[in-house]
Amino acid sequence: MSKEKIQICEEFFDIMPPEYRDLVTNATWGKEGRGWKDVGINKELIEQHSLCAGCPESMAFRYILASLPNPEDTVMVGSTGCTSLVFPHVAVHNIHSLFGNQNAIASGLKRALSVRFPDRVKDVVVLAGDGATVDIGLDYTLQSWFRQEKFTTICFDNELYANTGGQESGLMQKGFVAKMAPVGKKFDKVRLPEIAKESGCVYVVNCTVSKPSLVEKVVKNAVLIAREIGPTYLQLYTPCILEIGKNSMEGLQEMRDAEKPGERFAYKEYVSDEAKAFLADLAEKEKAKKASAKEALTQA
Image (cartoon, rainbow, N blue to C red; front, side, top):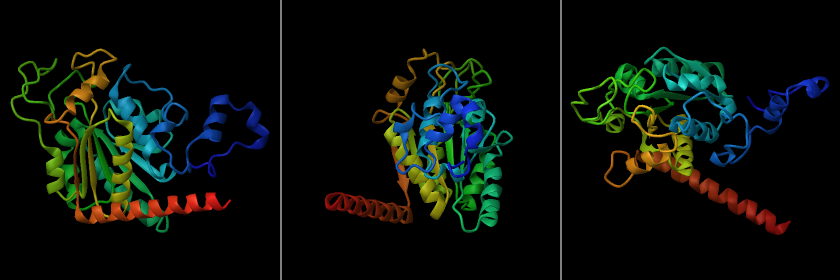
């Protein structure tokens, strides 16, 4: 994935499609400080997608790709859902699992990569919807946390089954009526962030994707902590505007409303003591690095 690995032979450069030349020449692979501000400029951050117009998942996907600390050595594991339509457009190694078994696939993959590349960092990131994470795949999800598998699980919480007609999921709000849930949800939204904490996750965040800088921070934290300490979990609200009766321009406001104080997606974060110490150490190193760069600039 890195620029060192993907190069165009000099003799063929002029006849290659301009889009591919741009991708190889200007991609953010290996760029220090890459992040959400690279979205809209770099082709590997999903320049185009096949999701519905205004879909919050497309925003979330772009921010996540831009925030991966080590994209050229990252493998993403997806599951059946709307994200299946986007993964073919993603310039990061990815695996499409069967519906619900994404955390089992990621467990084996992470272990195999550590054996195959013992001296190299290889990150694994699971990305699945609420149906795959909390309904059909809950056992696989929990067992990977129980085993303390060192990878990040990201749930795109649509609060229903978005790509199959609007059926009820465990993460749907109580009382919500959908096209294929006409009597409304009978019980409260499953508290998966709390379950994640109780199941051994060392870093858990529940939020929307309305603030790209926040998404960048939590994704980087989750991947880096998982790499060194243990399982991490992000639950990101990505409402299906089609199924909840919103217009294409209303997804952002829907997320902003859901993240107000007291609402179900008000920002919540759990960080274990070990993870706190790790993040504090990272912050100190970053501070020292900036101070060193500033000093070098003044002396130049």
